[in-house]
Image (cartoon, rainbow, N blue to C red):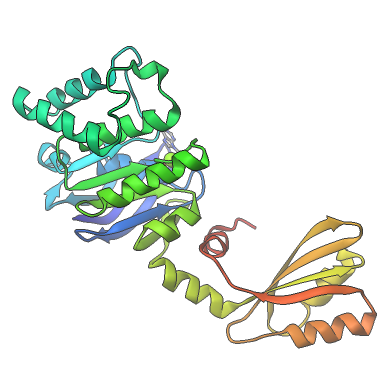
Length: 310
Ligand SMILES: Nc1ncnc2c1ncn2[C@@H]1O[C@H](COP(=O)(O)OP(=O)(O)O)[C@@H](O)[C@H]1O
Ligand SMILES: [Mg+2]
């Protein structure tokens, strides 16, 4: 459904997107992750034909998105980062206006507007002015707009950004329902959402793809590396480096908990469990220890590990 090849976008001398490659197959839900400024929005804007690339190519449903932009766009429902809505229009009126812009005739438009109002749970507000809607409802209007021309592919740029937990859950449930008969590429920074919703994840940073796999495989790869957590009292400037010097320890970070306690997160190499050595070290110096355990990695750990700047 999507084929991206060596796609690059430069702004002046800065490459916001720097030679990325990925595919999305029909029916997949793919999470597009990356820290702020990674190049997610720039990539999605190129895919949806809103911005030309500096080099490289992309096809959607077999259409080159630059040379066959109109054909490609018919297949895409795009919900941009900041949904541009007309505040002084009523919800139904806005959706009819958008349907007409997208080339639907009046009969199709009436039918589709009714359908998307139903799908997106807008029945209660379709006569309201957009400006009085909550952020959650505005996002639903944005989704209804993306859906109105019955596209096969949905490209959603941070659809839950700025929503409260209840609204996030509602949008997530709606996206899951849409996934039954759409292909979805979804950018987000809520990693927990991705673990629930997406079959596959693409992680980008500084304009490059850092990893792409199922959330399960990404986490499994990380889990092999292993993470140990310990709470110890004493001077972190002494204890941190002492742990760091142990064999198989890759990285130590710490966080002060108050009352003199410090929590250390210790990343160890694949297939090793250094808890015994850490314990030996701690008893040798007589530092009080109140917990020492192995933690399961999460998608968040994978994300942090792949996109760390230090
Ligand atoms: N129109 C633009 N002009 C110049 N720089 C831009 C423009 N749009 C984005 N950038 C830069 O490109 C980089 C990627 O931005 P963006 O794609 O918005 O990242 P993300 O959506 O992952 O947060 C950032 O460094 C941003 O400042
Ligand atoms: Mg963005």
